[in-house]
Image 1: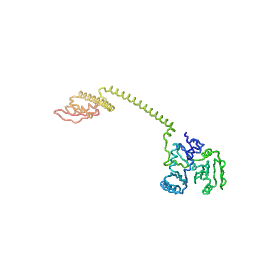
Image 2: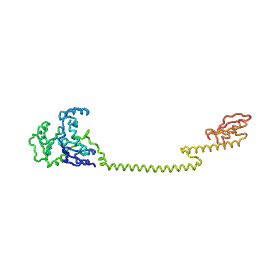
Image 3: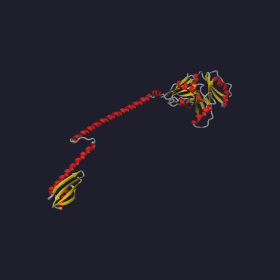
Image 4: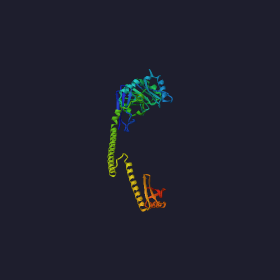
Length: 377
């Protein structure tokens, strides 16, 4: 829950009335975003409002057109004034840079909106408010003016005729005040004090559609420290959640690291037991595969030599000349008395479980010398 404050000030920034606004309350007529901050409603003659007939154009063109138009309404240089433009009503609000800067410097940094009281949108279309020595009149969407009470009352009849007003609501804190010389329908409401009047008035206004002078170059910047204090609970909760998440991740990582080290030590111990004469290399998997494959080749070769030896022993007139072996080839060279004896030896070896082929052969003196290739050892 976020509490915001609505504060009514006079032109010296003396607080006339204030109240806290609960943005979760359904009873309040105020509709504000929770990040809008506080609102200052100023009762001051420093603000002026003019209605111009401005054609629909870009913001860039407005920056050229509006200063030209207000130059005819103000004394002095238009560069000394800050203005804002309400596109829907074509009303331009005006205040001197020096005066709005003074408001900004002296109001609380939580104040995000600066609204002249006469420019507040309300549920009452045409309203005249008499506050002690001051008065303001608001003709909804047509004209806003705040001045001393005498000036307002002296020109009231002309103003109402100019804007063709047939009904006027009058609020006053002066019980003796009476407007009887106006030829229109008047609905008068009297209050016991200015504070009571402002309290009742605050229930009718809509600050979301009012002229906010804290915009453009005078927009209040975010007070990050105040923002932190307001949402520190959520910040601390987020940090606590993040801390728990990181701690949980660290514990899991440590556990996996310890498990990996234990598994690695077990693998190294098993390797040393299986291959005690081997020196451990960096690529353990390739090294183990090579050792296993080499063992399989050695066994096959020994088996082939045993079969060849048995074949020589069982064959007459066969002499083993040589055995050659590499990873891709195993060849024996034998000597016989004839080609038929050489073929008989090949058939014998095949019958003993080896797949052999007769290769090149030649006659050497009175003997036949031939090569026999052994396949798939």
